[in-house]
Every structure is written in C-alpha cells, then in structure tokens.
Image 1: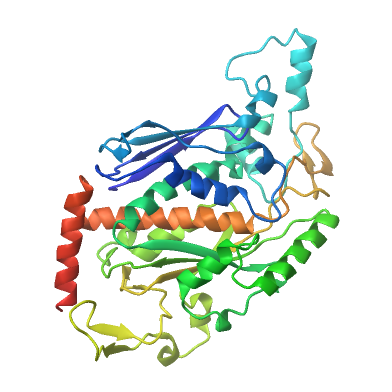
Image 2: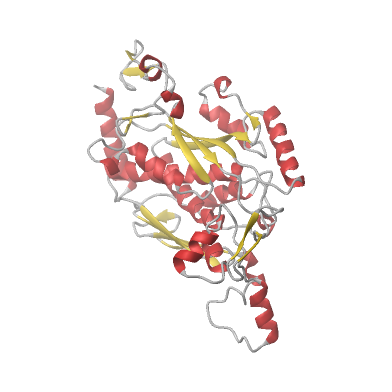
Length: 402
C-alpha cells in the first residue's frame, strides 16, 4: 500500500500514538490542520463527560519539519488528560499490591460484568483476560481519535488535488431527513451541517434529533443513526477491476465498516438497487454539449452508482450512506453475565455518551479520506507532492481529451 497507518494507546492510558507511513514530501502540514477535525469529533449534542476532559492537541514527533512533510513516516502524539486519574490502575509497570491504597485503586477499576454489543466478552475469551478492563481500554472508541489524525493529514493531501471529503447526519433514532428532498449540492449540505450541534443540514430535523436524544437520556438508553459521507472532485480511474482487493468500493466499505459503531454501508442507491429495474438503476451517459476540453466529455444525469463503477471511481461524487448502531454502554445496563462469578447480572456501566452519530461522521470522513489518499498515491506516485501534482495534471489532460 502506498500509505498505511498504525495506532497505539489505551483509552485511559497516558497517550495515543499514530504513525502514518507513505506521506509524500513537500506537503504543508501544521498542528491546526489536524486539531480542527479533533475538535469536530469532540463536540456535538449527545456526547458524554469525557469530551469535557480531553482537549486533544496534535504534537508531531516525526516526519514534519518547519511546517512541511519530509518524506518519512509522520508520527503524532496525543496526550490523555484523564490519565492523571488512572496513573495507578493503568500503570505499565507493576504496582505494590501490599499497599492498601494502591490495591484499592486497582480493584476499583476491575471489570468482570460484560456489555452486550461490545468487545468485552469475545475479547476476554479470545485473549484470556480475567479483567475485562484489558479489553475495554483498547477496544474503546477513544481509538477513533487516532483515525481522525490520520484522516486530517490525508484530507490535507487530497485538498492539493481539489478533492474534498464531507459528511452530515441523516437520521438519529426516529428523527430523519427526507433524502429525496436533499438534492446533490453536497458542499452546501455540509456547510449547513457544520453549524448544527447534530451535524444535520436540516435545522428542523436537528431539533427533533435533540428531543430524541433527550428522551433516550431520560430512559437511560442510547441512539444510533444514519450518516452520509461524500467525496467530491474525485477523478475517474481510482481503484481497479483487475483484482478483488483493488476495487475501490471494497476498500471503502472495509475501511468504513472498521469504525466501531458501524453496522452497514451503502454506496449510491445501496439496497434500493434490489427493488428497481436496471433501467432505473444505471446512470445513463450523455455527451456534454457544452464541453470545451476543461472536463470529461461525458456526463450523467444521475449518480445512482455513488461514483463507483467496476471497482473504479467514475468522476462523479462518491456517496456512501452508513448506519451507526446505538453504543452499548447504557445508563440502565442490559442483562448480562459476570465472567468472574459465572452468574447472571447487569452489564458494566462507565461514563459514556448517549449518541455518537455526529462524531462518527467525522471519523468516517477520515477513513474515506485515507482510502482515497491511498488510491491517489497508488496511481500518481508517492515521493513528492509536486511530482504527484504534475502526474495528476497530465492525467487529467488525457482524460479530458478522450
């Protein structure tokens, strides 16, 4: 892969660490380019108390010099401000359990009551953990903070080629936007969503979403929803039909599905294609009568394919609709088991959110940006931004002449 990343760190550990390998040299990159998306992830209605503690700020520790990437792996560190309350229980070195205060502190963080819908039970069984804390800490959605760092850097790269990655919320619980009335001015929808605490482009529906979240909170419950993630300005030809693992739709679906809360991904019409005739599904192609050599000669009146045909981008916006489940940590815990006592009980509860759908959109943007950056570098080169730009412009000239 031209570009790849690894993350490390636990939810309540001292810090999160990110290494993004394959970033070309010459890309202007500042901490605020990343911090803006970290802030977008932390805000929004329905988030819990953790967001008031963590004010994530980017610290580049490699790969960036004097405001530009230098071709080496970009490494980033994010400090967990809450670690001061967990320094004993999450210490990487052994602690003196003969000290009653230390023993009490560690035991207070011990978990044996697992949560349905979380990694707790399968993770404890798989890795042989007695204390489910060992599972919770790494499987926590706190890890998505690291992905937002990666996505922000990838967005900065994509921006050099006029590619934008956007998202907005379509549904939370029973409150939803009528997709048929939205239109396809994706940047306008994104702008409207960015001034909403629910990241929804419809102000009236945003208020309905707030009420739905408030109701869930009073009931001790949680809510999921639908998010649309869109990439505009994507050139024709990213991805390939030559091998299964090079198909762009598969790469996108896999990346989006890897986000903790995601349960389904639709591209374009998605499951609706199973209900319609082919004549209603496939985007018919026409010659652009106003073509002057400054864009593709061919155009479509629809984008039912969501910008991908045959495993490749076709020059239209890439449109994905993603379903996020309600988070599994409920104020009124569900029935579950205690793996220590082997008895029926209630699931563990730890400080949590009511709804993470708006924040999930920012994470999904990051994963889509990562896949597109990888595909872009795969096609146009990997070493230096200026060289990649030359290759890109030359390719567009050829495409526009077809």
